[in-house]
Image 1: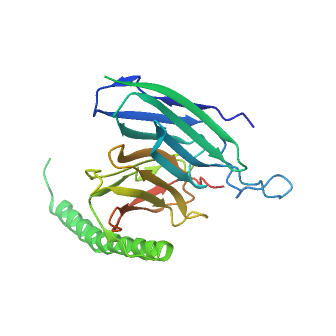
Image 2: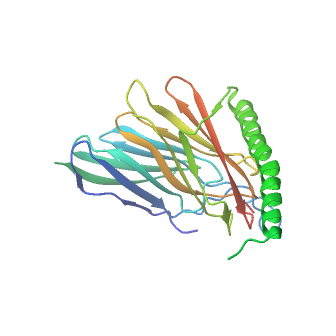
Image 3: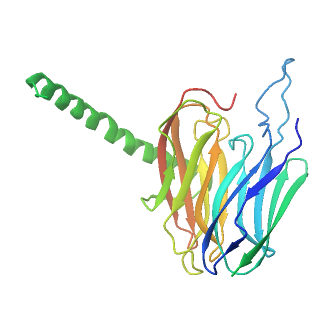
Length: 108
Length: 148
């Protein structure tokens, strides 16, 4: 299994009040727990179960993911530019592993 | 092109059959979706055309079916969407995802990719800040099982 690698596409700046698009993806197999290996044993579930986007420490958008989200979960969503600061992206995996990315953002 | 009597008759009977087959079917899809929402949330939703679930009607693979979801909402403190949930009733696990939005900060629209095990009506439910549940659904036919 490859190491999950998160990526985001976000503008670096926006005007105050402007709506901007965020695209996020993390490479991840999203093993559903529904499949069996060659010996007939269930392959245990291992999915990203939560995605959170914080804008200056406040949650702006989040997702509870279940088994039916495709491998390499991708989300495109829209935020409102309110002030300069930091966007934090967090992906939480079954078993407790967490993957993060941060992005500096300027409101002019 | 000239229309023959046969063309007109065929078009008429196909049209009639279409109306006879699809209207009740779509009404039934709505009823089934509302029953499902009632079972899963214990609450009654209403069918709404404010809520939009955009998916292809035909898709070759069930592994990565594109899905866009949005609703018209001012997203103010007084009038906003708390969350939108998506269900695939004919998947082995019905729940697909819940998307949470924040007034003044996020817009209630999102795109992602989902797995579908078989052709089915995919169901979306929006929970408004006053607790009202709005529902819509869309038919998606996938050619391969995305959950196997």
